[in-house]
Amino acid sequence: MHTEAIQHLQQDPVMDQIIADIGPCEFKARKGYFQSLVRTIISQQISWQAANTIRNRVYGVLENKVTPERVLQVSDDELRAAGLSPQKVAYVKDLAQHFYDKRINVRKLKYQSDEEVLQEITAVKGLGVWSAEMFMMFALGRMDVFSVQDIGIQRAIHNEYGLRKRPSARRMLEIARPWRPYRSIAMWYLWRKVD
Image: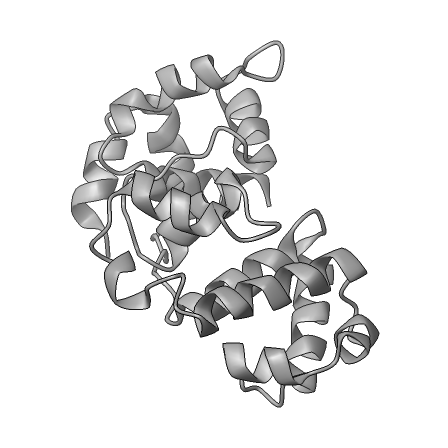
């Protein structure tokens, strides 16, 4: 899977070694735009393990019906009891309202430019540039997303490229330039390397 992308990335000797270490690429887009953004909110600023535990509890409260309508029906207290902070409850509710009111037009998202998607997603409380980038990558399946804000990517580039200090956004973009148009696949490998 992603043979062309991998062959392209292997032209970078550091990325070639990372690919050899990790093995086949299992990156694929997730189904469900709303569910993807709920996952993003739940995962903010916590470990993967904690995010998985809380996500399972939240999905339980929602009876595995992760829809805007269901989120709006469930009380804030129930979501807090599942492990969401009061702030994240507000974010999930605001997201649900955006989808319910069709302020986020699900039918158009796939066809919008990265900039248009960024504007739609960041209009929701609690969803910033990083969240929009993760959405473009994991929900829309875009192959050339690169996040200079992602701590894991910063750490991986710092470690794998033997840099003395954490790289600046400009330095990260320089290193990632040759990876275009497959920077999403490069990020997937970098995350696996730091996991």
